[in-house]
Image 1 (cartoon, rainbow, N blue to C red):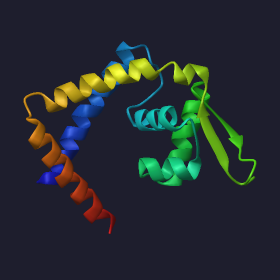
Image 2: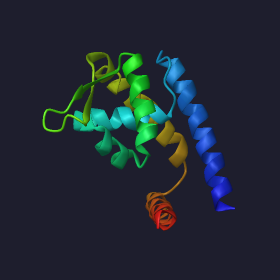
Image 3: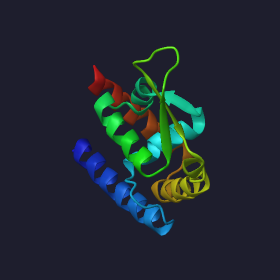
Length: 138
């Protein structure tokens, strides 16, 4: 039951995010790219391995996401000077320029998600979902 509910919530959130991306004139991105963009905005530059850890995604998935951002001109990659097998990913100026739009989109989503939900309940549901996520990792 809970997995089905989480799935429905995710689907609705993704629809809202896709619509907001379109309204803000952000073409070619899917909601899944948002976490990657935010990680790069926060950290500046990351290796593929670091991105995979932050996003809790497989490296192959991260590679696909990063390549899409690069093809759209939002990110760039360069070989790591210390480890030639590793790539370092960072945002271009065009990618960095998305920050305010992404904040607006995120605020709209969070406003809808938490509308009418008391702060104590917000914390509790986050704690419970975190525990469920952890249980599924082990």
